[in-house]
Image (cartoon, rainbow, N blue to C red):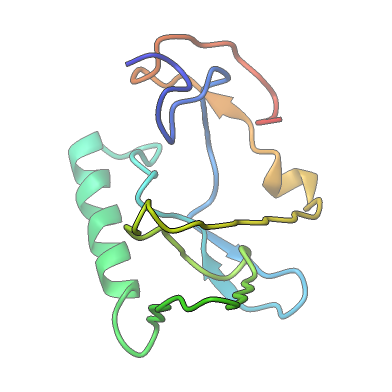
Length: 130
């Protein structure tokens, strides 16, 4: 697969992030993973993938689920620092506008060092994922 042709494939390598982070405002622990995670340092890849799959499956159970059924004029806002989210299929014949403002985060945790991503065709080591 060509670098940059799919979510998770980066030309600067795969960012290494913690599985759990502390929200800087609330102090609550939050999962910092998703379907894009595929490796945990110190674990065999198959063991890590099974652990990550179980973690996401366990975390994404009621009452911690919200499925939005869109209607014209809806506005949904979330804090990426404490929510797992994913896009859902939609009718491409209907117009859809996504506005995603972002604010800078803590460079120590948001600009994670990158490592080799064998799934990507190109790789340039970087000290951040900018």
